[in-house]
Length: 294
Ligand SMILES: [Mn+2]
Image 1 (cartoon, rainbow, N blue to C red):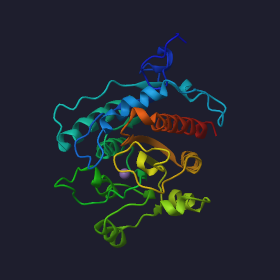
Image 2 (cartoon, rainbow, N blue to C red):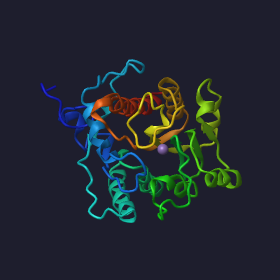
Image 3 (cartoon, protein in one colour):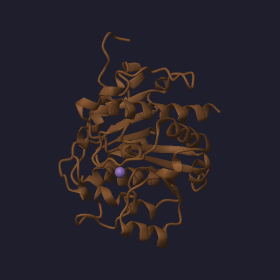
């Protein structure tokens, strides 16, 4: 290792961060237009990468260094046309490029509507895929503030083209969304209050999923005592170790083919949020490799 940490996820030296030899690609998407309350998610990707440079790279639970598989970090994608519709095309194209190269893409936002094109790009390559959404919010509105691509609508766009859905950690939704779930919700909603103990909720979530699964994490799914730095924090969220247990099972029992982490709005006074998100991503990359190793 050089005596400084390179400016990429994990602070990795060139032999572990080159695009060609890396299994994983960290795709930085600093896009924010429709966020409703707190702002600042466009600074999320940089804060996550910055925190990750100061992280121990050995995973003591797994007994190996997940970075050995190679983790490449892209430059920030620039959004020349900021409209949500143009964003969809830009992101889909970027993700498709890395999937065509055989990479596992970890998209970092940015606001949650970024998930829609990332999911579509994966579906184009993998065919029928399901989705696990970790989030405080159902995100099932038909439109919000006039746009179907608002971050409050992202799951409404996705559930219709998902082969199996599990919504985990939900604790905030509108009456319209509750009615939609009652009428059309054929998938399990694992309410945050039911995710506080035991593993029954994990069984229900995983049972709803097809063999190939895309994972989207809105960081507000975690408890705001752990991640205060997000636009719309809600009390009563997921705790750290149950979340890791669930994700480890998910990676072992299904093939996780892509993921994103959205909605971190960093604040220099609360860098623990940035560190948690960096560590969460790194744990998942380890779980994916652990499942390959059997
Ligand atoms: Mn949310």
